[in-house]
Amino acid sequence: MSDTAESESRLSKSEVENELLHMSAADWARAQRFANFFSRSLTGITGDDLLQETLTKLLSQDRVWKRGLKPILVLFVAMRGVSSNDLKKELNGPIDPFKAVSTTDEEPEDGSREHFELGVTHDTPEAALIKRQLLEQIEADVSQDEDAHLLLLMWIDGVRGAEAATELGMDAKRHDAARKRLARRLAPYEMARMQQ
Amino acid sequence: MNSTKKSEPHDLLANALARELLEMSDEDVLDGADAGATKAHGLRLLQAAKAESGRRRLAAARQGVANHRSTTGPSNAGVSVEVAKAYILQAMNDGRYTLAARKLDEMTDEDLLGLYSRIRRLDLPDGSGGSSDK
Image 1 (cartoon, chains in turn brown, purple):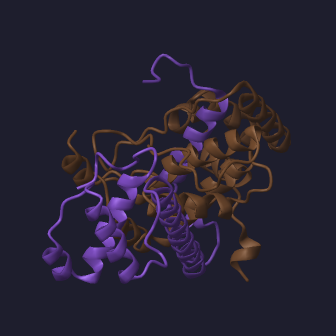
Image 2 (cartoon, rainbow over the protein chains, first blue to last red):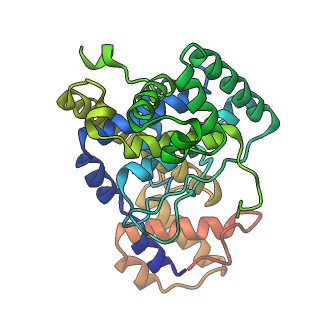
């Protein structure tokens, strides 16, 4: 791709800011909850820290924002990349904070606003171990809630939505209640701080 | 790219959670939180990110200038126009460079300092910057 075509396919700094300024309250909540989930694998980093670092990288254009993508999808993908890099940094010790660790993103190439794949991360054995331990901890956390626990096992197996409900023999209402409880445990929304 | 790699359980869980959050109604995802306060908090993070992005850009620019200085040899800092002119005249007198004396008098201070800087770089023992000088 030529430099011109590439610069036209990605949002400028002011366009990035404009997209974020117009994001809905619910999408900010989605972003925060997803950040809270990923920050669990990082020592001393809160969901807010992770979200702010991701916003910084998008505004600095260290992370590419392809034109035509929904802001919440871009945030989800970028946050995953940033958290993965932060985990690697944590395991490798301190590095220059101004060094560009990653200049690419894992967004879909087709520019569709609806298409969305998070892809997979490239973990070192140490990072994979931390994630396995985190999963064990999550499983222990939800083990008292039978429906949420079963649903968690389905999600870890790559099965979700109506397909998971069918496999677990749950009706829509029971499944909906279980997924809300599970999402709340995996990605809590910090009510106390929001009410300040 | 990664099509042959099997997704790890944590990746699959993250994918499932992302999709669930995207499919949840706005009301469910807010989970009782005030929408106005939620957005205000997000915008505060955005503001802080904007400030941090500016700080990093400034630091990168300063680093760039420092790197440039370290590769372009001596600077003109502290050199007067008279000293620069004398240095250029000396270089012309010993036959290393050719420039009409009349032209030297017609040059602006800025051009004089620029020429001084270029000759100084050519005079460096390792000749750094000499061949690419314009």
